[in-house]
Amino acid sequence: MDPARAITEAAIQKKDPLCVKVLSMFTSILGSIAGNLALTVLATGGVYLGGGIPPKILPALADGGFMNAFANKGRFKDLLEKISVKVILNDRAAILGAARCVLEEELGEGG
Image (cartoon, rainbow, N blue to C red; front, side):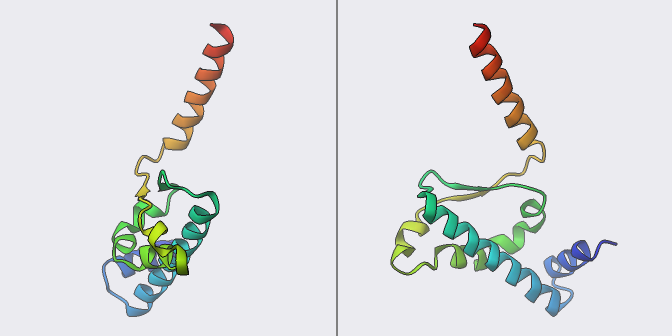
C-alpha cells in the first residue's frame, strides 16, 4: 500500500496516534497556506480546495485545525473567518471546467 494512503487511513480511523499527528500537521499547513492565499487575493467569494487529497481527508479538514490555521492571521482573523471554504468532490471538475472554457471560446468566435 502507498505510504501516504496508509498514514491517511490510519489517521482518519484513529488507529495510530503518530498518523493522527501527521495528518493534523498536514491540514494545519494546508489551512495556513490557503489562508495566506485567500488574504493575498481577498477571496471574499470563497476558497475551493481541489485535487485528489482534500476529498480523502474530509474528517481531518472538518476537525477545526484547518480553519484555525486558515484564519489565524492576526488582525485579519475576522475577515478570514467570514470566507467560506469548500472542497470540490468531483474528481473531473478540472477537465469539465477546461472543456467549458474551450466551448465558450469556440462559440464566442463562431457566433
